[in-house]
Image (cartoon, rainbow, N blue to C red):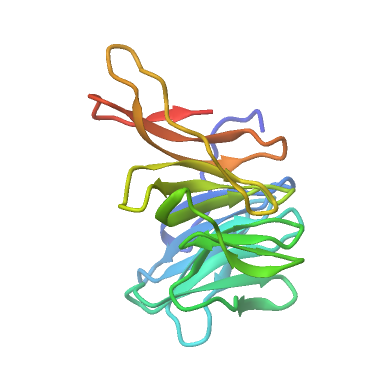
Length: 219
């Protein structure tokens, strides 16, 4: 905005902003004065909206928002153990996403795609499907772009090999993005993961290299 960092209002306790749309609406979570954990949205004017929880729950947080104002979040019991994904909009409030047991959504887009974990995608044409892996047993979907490309990671090989960053195209075909080259005095990369992908297909994420104890950002 050109004005530097600005503190956002809270519901009375800790707060964290996790996503922002093109109009400046921000979503995340805030604790209340009684330490309840609530999904919230900050309007572009800075005012804060408590998005509530699903019926029977006491904990929630929001993870993503589309430019159309559709919010994706997670609702849970007070201990945040039994979790359910929800969508929220200003007309209907929070409604539970219909997902198989154990699946939690992580991102969505304006075209109606939803992705989450263990690695899955919901697309408007074909509905729910699990994402193909790179031969291993698991996949993680972190983000989906405007065209339906999904960024995340997947295990290599059937025996729980190292995870590497993956970009799934809109038809669900996975492309392993490999690992980092050698960084400074350290060896070549051994693991990686993708966190986001933009409309042009550029992926960002993290990777580790042999002999180094820290992870490195990549684009």
